[in-house]
Amino acid sequence: MLTVRRWWGRYGLRASLVILTLMLAWGLRQSQGTVVYELYRFLTLPFQPRVDVQQVALENATVRELQTRLVELESQNQRLQQLLDYSTTQGRGVVSPVIGRSADHWWQQITLGRGSNDGIKIGDVVAGTGGLVGRVIQVTPNTSRVLLITDPTSQVGVTVSRSRVMGVLRGQAGNRAVMQFFEKVPEVRPGDTVVTSAISQLFPQGLPIGQVESVDFRKSPAPEAVIELTSPIGYLEWVIVSPNPKAEGLEASELENRAADSQDSVLEEVAP
Amino acid sequence: MFDPFRWSPGLRRFLNWAVIVLSVVFCLLVLPMRLPGMELLGVAPNWMLIWVVVWSVNRTVWEGAIAGTVLGLIQDGMTTHDPTNVISLALVGILTARIRKQRYIQEDFISIALIVFGMAVLAETAIALQFSLGSLQQRNVNYPSLSEIWIFHQQIALCSAILSSLWAPVLYYPLKRWWRMIETVEQAQTG
Image (cartoon, rainbow over all chains, first blue to last red; front, top):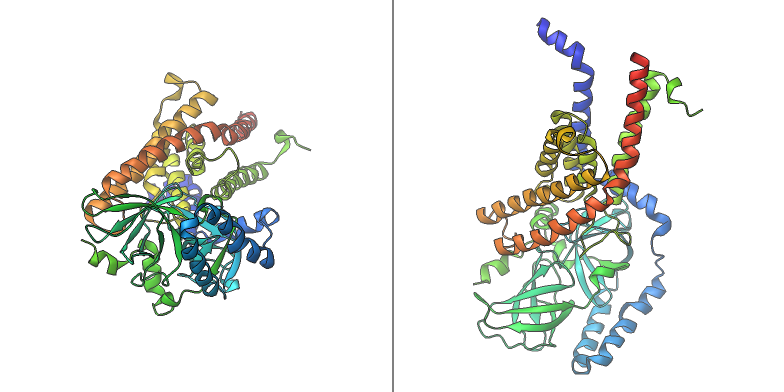
């Protein structure tokens, strides 16, 4: 007893400080760093890109897409169709500035300057200029975190719009992703456009993603294609967040689990 | 006005804590930021790791381990807790505190940069190992395959080590000066 009391007399203050700090850190971890992100948003407020809806609409699809389409004459028609598709699905979106990137090297995430106060929910679809960017995985009152489709753990069910061949898109850090086909001899060639497929559990059908850059038919166990993403994921300044019809059917907790490991389980089952 | 020798012990302790907390908050806020010159192949300096190294260099193993755990927990909150940063940062704290600096290396920018370089590689390896373990156990279907993990690891570890060691003095120099001043004042007042 005496030794305990003596120990407490000597180290009591220090020990309680350590415990207090550990508890604080635990609290921050459990709250997913909400305080930090809110503070970060508040401090970077003067530096955030000004988001003007009209300017966004202008810059949004036409300008950049037209520039690329001049070069890509062949895929012009398909792209135009997708563009129409794209603007109709983006009707109810919230335009939000990108205020930060991932706080860790292993994850490809971005932080947005809008949160639950603006109606953003976990599972919402995030699109940039030209196509799908990712999915909201965490929301604080004024910020939200997005898991990009370039993240190595992100898997999206996709389809080649010309031949309707299906596959899974896996992120490869950078502006590239790899599409793994289910078939042994898929009907695909460089230049084909790739969109989200109907069996993806996380994203609505038909969101433009990118173009096939090269195909490797000899890859085992299934052929793979390198996809060049349409949106400039490395240089995003603002994005459009729109509600996800597929997420609304799922329970919130289920979605969070899903957000944590981001899986398309149906696709996993189908995959060889 | 700015005379540390006239501060009361209470004020001094308060200011010391304030500096510690504010420097951690600074690191937390810089984490999601990508300023020009802070990025190499999409990888930014590991500010949490720099802080833990700077803190542990002149402290005991326990203090290093606790600091690593606390910062690891916070960083987990800001990213994800699977795989966790607690293990890697606590390891960094313990090892940095154990290095016998007086005997082997001088305490200056170069040696701090060297320690940070080594520790960054170590920390990323610890995370890559957790990823590999998860991938082998099939805990999460979406973990990349082993070969992909280790390719990422090479890239991330090298970039993170280079950038962190180059940016380390930004944190090390002011904090070292501050702690040295506090130490001098304490010695003057007790002795």
